[in-house]
Length: 416
Image (cartoon, helix red, strand yellow):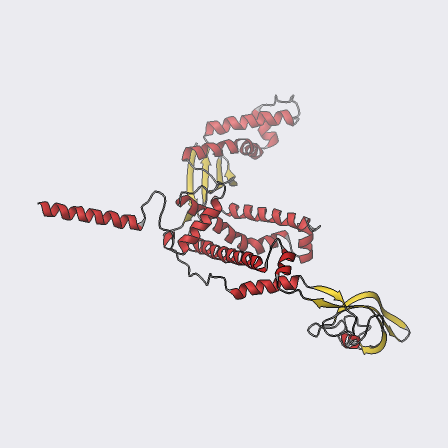
């Protein structure tokens, strides 16, 4: 068997396998016997037709195809053993020829990652100290999340929540009839119908009121657009927004905190964690961007496959699936794959860069906690705060050794 290789771009290799004539001939005869047992050839019992007869009846090219199907995997494994190559994944048969039998394949190879002098990588550290204003903003967000509506016994005013029964007629035709609709009287939010909130101001609970409004010319229902309509409204209930104070009671409400200071301390920790995570993410992106990374196309395709499976599982938790999602977006799966490919490729490069970093730093990326340890190591390097490297002396150790050598040489010179 003759094997030839040619390195291709993107971590792929062209593999050409030429099979010996004797082996090919034997494989053809084995294939002919197998065919003669499965296909009835006139004048012969199953499995008894001569090779030449089977070849004429079945076709020589078809026999060669059978040989490729049955012998191809064995030839591929033998070729890999001969050249000492460990592929990343399954090879692709791109072509074959007969007489002599030659197989041509493309073999995906493991990714290649070169980080270069990654220990010299430095990132500007943004303001990492958590400012008190950030804590206060987080408290205001919590405060807003815990507001509630409380019934009031007074006339309606801006900011209230009105619960109304609403009827609208044009002539003798009723065009709107709702019960218990909720409407926030907010000057910053557009009314369903301009002027509606203004007419509710000053009303009290259980009061009824009638007024006329004109539907806008661009109203969504063209049959109502520009039409004056008579409205009847019944204010069933009225509530105002109650905003809790930022105090110990709010801290009790949102978690197991004794005091407001306990809640603030937790918010500072959360904000600091977020700052650190953002820095680590920037550092990982920078590491991947400065690295030389190659990988076979099949690797990216697998990453996209895995992402789509996870995305589909997430959709199913919402009573949807990938097919529904694509239909709603009016796109095909292939178009969607192309759309997400850059994002998945960036994620893949970051993962490969991180794995290479772990390898160079002597960390076992497969062990528990190793990913976090590697990310923390990367953050320290990006800040210029990591000097030691497993198996190699630090710069200080090198300087100390050089100084000791210099001192000894000086001592020798003085004794001569």
